[in-house]
Image (cartoon, rainbow, N blue to C red; front, side, top):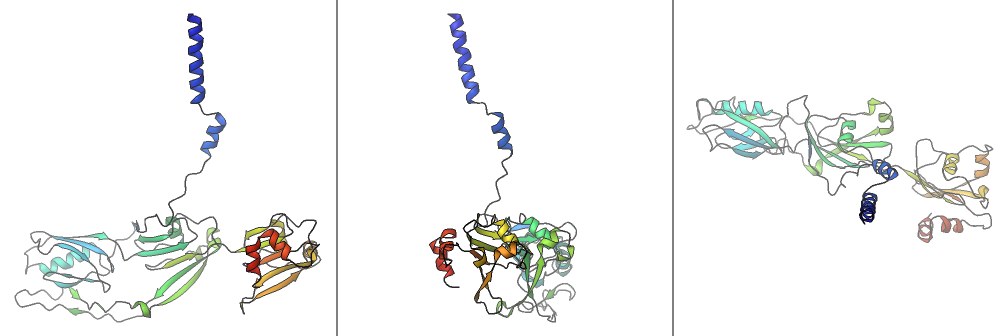
Length: 361
């Protein structure tokens, strides 16, 4: 009886162990699962701050600053810097904060109060919110959005901060920058009542519209950077960015192969792709292909119209005819040898909906 109970107990232990033990192969496979990607752009935090340790932060338009003055709580408070780089403060009126560090601004405020409002004021300035160093990146990156970065980051650094390039990124980055007109800065001194004079060197006053830029009159320039070259060591493409820059990295261009090929579909277009390479990517033609009657539907870059380029793929693949460069959005159609038209190839490769699209050519 004891022997029977022992066997039953061993059976229960064995079953429990088997149910809670993962096979060795399954554990190995679990280790190879990549980490989940970052949150989509709609859920990501659009205000990401990166601190540059190599320089002191300088206050800019839109920043929110906190000013605390010992023994003068009536002057302390939180202020937002205007587009002109100024803010209104009790007793000192309009104060210029643009391009000052927190220490420089605190010293300027202390100088304005010293001997008049307070004998020896102690002023502290902190930046509560950075809004003047925005960099925008969109397109084929893992975390597109707006990033607040001190200093002037490079294109490569901003791409890295944005999570790196997406798998379907193109080879070009476009940097769009606002060109601001050169304007003479007009600075006047604050006028105070006789009862509360302030030294002339203490604080400058600017009109709120002196440096404000009218969005309707804004003009932009665009720079084209080669990402493929940058990643291969061409650091002349690693341009230094400026606050307000918009970086757009389009998805990679594609071309399409349809009809009598073994693997019809869309393929990423890389620099220097030719017709021979395109057919090779599609695993070659089938035995039913009319390779001498292939057609490339292509958009004319000058007129914008769709053109038909007739090609003899068999002659190109055998080297009897010169290879043809492939352009973005090319449709390479290889018809069936039993049909005179290419409609059957389109129905086979893309379906009826795509056939409707191609009827516009």
